[in-house]
Image (cartoon, rainbow, N blue to C red; front, top):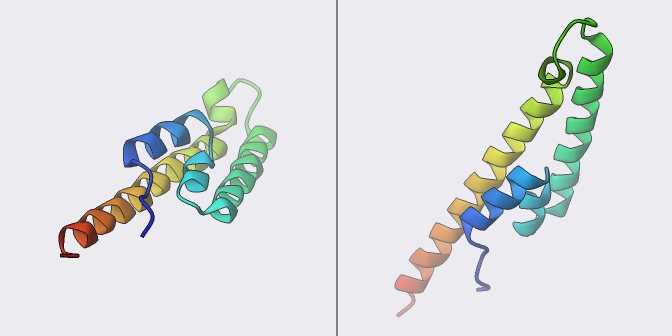
Length: 92
């Protein structure tokens, strides 16, 4: 079994660039899906927000998807890493 990436590395990559955590988890299609919905919902909230709304408010949909992508990447990396550690301990 190949060593999975460190979950903290996946977390840092996902915070810096949306979808990159999924790519490090060897799930590039999942990362592209998150990136697609980030752009879709970010664009939707930009078009529907009132002119006096802040930058965060105008892209709230995109920021929400980004937050979910961070959580998803870390959670899946952590589970994969713990399974790998458990299998390594009990292989003997």
